[in-house]
Length: 487
Image 1 (cartoon, rainbow, N blue to C red):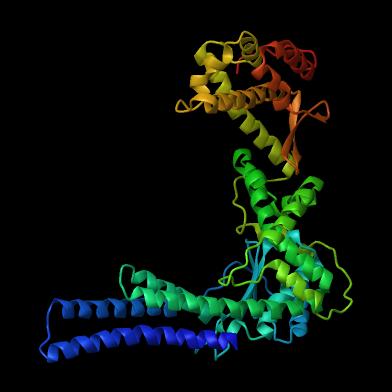
Image 2: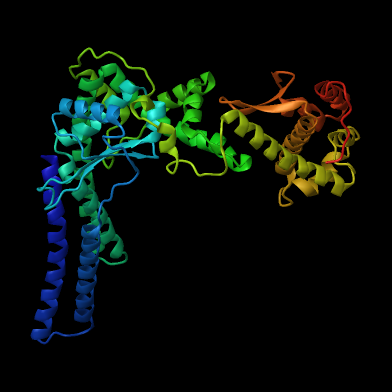
């Protein structure tokens, strides 16, 4: 009923817009035929033309927009297990299965239908599955997500969804095209009202589609999937920023899905994501313009739904798809070199990045005269004399910074650069290596144990009297050897 109301309101918007246009046009014609021409009449005529072009242009653009399938196709022949699950879940949702299933690189799943005649004539059905979901969710949770999407087919939601989406774009474009025009305001408020009604209809459809999730996967699994999807987007972004980005420095192509699964399985990350998940569920916005109800609302609604006793399936979601690592190629990774396992990639990236920052301090030390050979020993000796900070400041800190802001930045930068220089010297001497740590990017490992080098050198940066103790600890990391060398 709400979807039908949205369609009626859509028609009403264009009736209003064209009615205003024809009304102005009629007034202009009457004015001219009765001899009341003038500047005001001319302005009214121009205004009518502006509205006509704004409405017509936006409507034409919206109607011409064609939906095209994206992502890597997952055919029945190549993915029999996935299609068997899709067929089963379509039966649960009381609908026919999609005609096309595709893998996409986003943390999302969606369905759409290429209908015609305002949704009256059905067309090809498409289902999209986000590759990160296959790594982040269990098979049971993937079944819940897919059942929800197929539930939209069962409820007939996809028939008008494309029309609703295009209509919102057309209305927004019309209002934008009339910026600065007085007639913009009634159309703007009508468009806002339409957006509220359309969003209300889609929120109701989401709750209806959740019924299929509960039937297919069980209440507990369906609720778990909802919570996880909310935090998986955050996890995916953090993973890319902190780990996948290392591939550039390493000049190696990462195994993205293997790494993401390991990232999600790390105890530190699991604790962090649990906190993020709870916070996101609690703080998720609730607006009359939202197309989806808040997760907490959907979870609570599931409590009232009848649910069968469905066995849990905690296998990784990607077990439903054959050749998952090949699938990621071209979707979420670029070929930057040979494919490398994560230990090799982190080893190479760590060495490259640390060397870069070590060279910054070594060059600054040479340029300032406090470290002719660019070694950490020379920098520490200069810190002990109270000379290094002032000497290095012009070379490592933004000259625009002043006062406490400058002091804070200088101490932090020198600490990080000195740590990098120490680590680089240890790596070059074969005393240290880099090991992947899914809880904090990587570890610097010396004699089989992780060493926090920034914390080790920090005391001498703020207190020259700590120089002797810091030098002694660095000497111990070197195995008692004095590693004085030029970089």
